[in-house]
Length: 140
Image 1 (cartoon, rainbow, N blue to C red):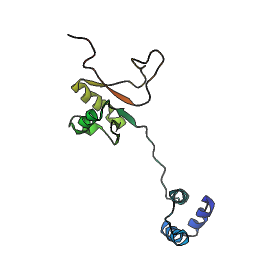
Image 2: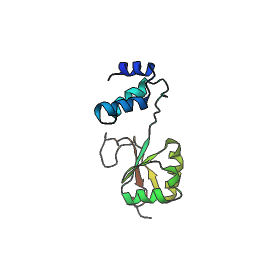
Image 3: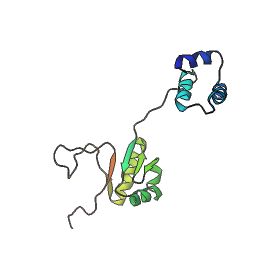
Image 4: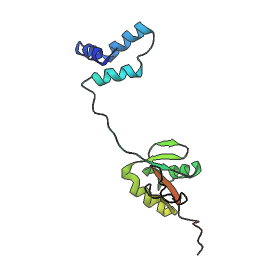
């Protein structure tokens, strides 16, 4: 099966359901995702794929992220959780999340700033890292 053969089949009126039925009869298995992709890509009804650049917040602990996800001041600004300590922050939610975190005494580190303990020239990996402003070593 190739892109060209699928394009010809679509021109001849073959539907995805027809192809699925044929594939099961022929192989005893479902259509592999790669062949389904070729079929869908050959279809003129396929809209363009959407892209976006997510901001990934990396919390120092799962407990802190659990609290951010649960707290009413921050949960509306967080997207899909990616792991125990990481969550997507929608781009439009970054400023409101930053303000909410400041209310807790927390801040978002600038991803382009050098690492404080990394020495000169070291840069943070892409994404946002949660840092606390409290307990910075100075006493009042």
